[in-house]
Length: 509
Image (tube, rainbow, N blue to C red):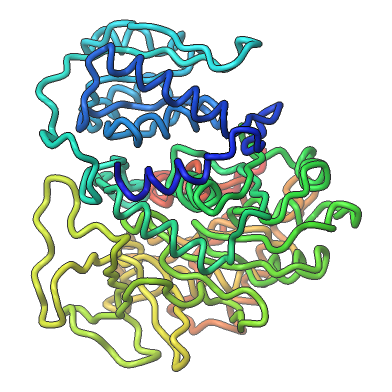
């Protein structure tokens, strides 16, 4: 048994303790029994340690049991979005190379033909509650020999295969081991001071690393409880916090922006310790509004799938939180490097590189990066930023998203920060589009706080004046598009490659 599995099993030792709420409370005893039952089903179908199992289930108790069963059995869990359309599924299956699948019945209705074309056959169904609402269909592919011959679950045994979001390029495979996951869990537990008294609210998709590690595994290992929803529901948020005594929530900025526009019932705040924001830049104004309304800190953090979740976080009080910063690295090393991959001084802009027990050394099927003179094992994130004299990290954008205007490199994040400071702006995104004279020009897409009531021309004029006052002429957007929404992925990250392919015109209809 790996140390991760041992930690999970010890945390689930009290059979009578309620641990997961998904319409009703499930006890530790029920979790253990359902995990063992599912393991037996997997073994009977021929699943061996090292086989890849696609887990395509919505946020649910069934996902938790399926995920834990993979870890306990030594199978490699490949989490998948059960809502993806069939065209995306075809591309995903080519990447996953899954041997088996544990799939939600509603997804099977859409995917049946594609699964069969890919050589999968329906195996069996497993029911996890007396009401019949938690059902998993197990599908069998054409498994070859197990990719991991060893039967022991040592720390280097593969646990989860995920793929980067692909917002700027083709997704890359990230194979996380049991050791990576446990190291990440320890970092989160330490930085957020998680204990058995905590109740986490799970509203982020569990097929992404934030939901899996930051919320699910870290809460279970620290002995806490989890209140789960299929997704974020603004109308249910504060009722759930109050009813179940939630102490912390892992959010994305979009969720906080929505909550900041709604009244906060004071009776729901008795147990809340903090709100955590990650996955995309948090507008300081939104953070300030939420802190004022809730009376608890909003903790901005930074993470990646390659680090099994968290890289940096701002500290809880009485530690110092710096506006605009994602905080300090926890339990790992971080360095800012220049174009030659050499470390730079504080406040100098460069690419963020990371290394640690929770960080992969290379992408699946790729060689590790060369040793540039300060040790092997570093992952170069593609994120640009700098570190101040206190070690706080500030992210300025993605290397691939930098705009090259006549040789001058322009950070979209710098322009976005100016636009987001306007009281009528909820969110913005800046991309570089081809320009015959300068090579590239900056185009800004802006979502108003009230899209249905905005005067687009008046807002555009105000934003142009704001940019003129705060940005040098080359950095000012050549065009400001007023839009009702931005294309985002499941974790709230803006898909800028989609914007680059859209005609830049107002979209408020």
